[in-house]
Image (cartoon, rainbow, N blue to C red):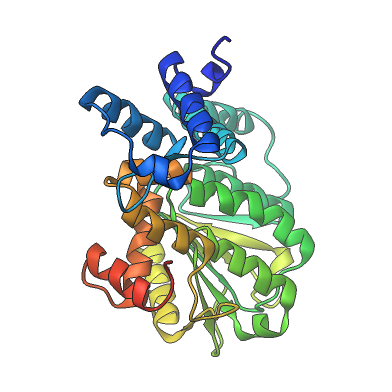
Length: 332
């Protein structure tokens, strides 16, 4: 049989070994497993490779078990898509594709929706919701470290969620730290609350403010969007790139963040799905790179989740986090 998994980045030997594990797992009993000879160093290295690929797992006793085929293939596909996306984004950046396309706008007549398309302007007026969404698309595409957002109303329409969801997921997949402050009305709006909890499960940090907050979006602490008319956000926004003003808006955000409360979970005493998976990785993976690959996230995102878990548990290190999680019943 040919290598059916080659297109997913699995070589002949890795596929052969994975198939052997599947056959062994389906035919062997627990007692038979315990009586097997220890693998040689070369075999152990090959098994470690399967664990790194997400095709196998290692339990606390060091025993290797194959990951079920649907989950294994799904992990391989996610990894391939992630690497492909990273390659394409790097290539687009290397050739300045976005910048080149934006230059086409500079040669055209001024847009009626914005006072100017010249990025050298420190403050630009964007008129209309479509112009604002275009600016958000541009800013988030280039985001590399941080995205700060507030929503004073605490309520998002289904249309707004449909527009923002792919943008937010793209940021989280890249390991961009996302912090959001929502107005307290979110607690009475199930659609928005469910959406925020979904973002949190993927690594976002969300807090609720019971005090009035200002509407602002800040990307990488280098650009910000604020409404032209806070009472009518559909009118448009100011795109601010002036360093002093952006720094002031960041300070404002940090004050609002410090005064806000954590978003309550469906059960605040239980870990989210991603937190539970990361806690399992603390036992099964000896390297962050291996754990991140198996979970289909970047190393940066994995470490960010881990830091949140340690804060929740009040743990000083990873070993202590695993022990406290075990005591709390977060780990079986």
